[in-house]
Image (cartoon, rainbow, N blue to C red; front, side, top):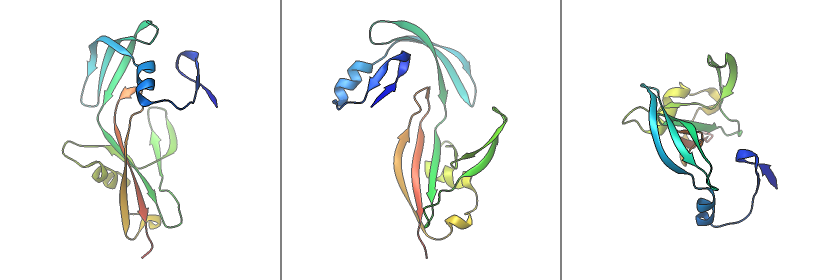
Length: 152
């Protein structure tokens, strides 16, 4: 399978060692400078060199840690939240989640954000932490967990 990758190159999915991939795609940061900083976001400008020697400046956004839950009931239905996002002035479906406060466990964040248990999620449940996601376009880690509800 071929897919279009960064910088217009085609990337082929092949089996390689992690060490090979890391060296083939490593970016070198020669420096960075702060552009903007507040409670919600810190924006920096980085001087980056990609494999092959090309250098350019890239904006880097640093965001607080977040947590997202995939809540699945006994009928294999997933809990989604219908929310308005003012940035885009659009409504859309989202997984429950939010910013992780200092000292808070990521799964506690998802409990607070999803609110009272909906009918599709009532009854006993178990959490399984999947790991952390990193979107790649910013310095932002998102903890991801699956919560499966079992019938009583």
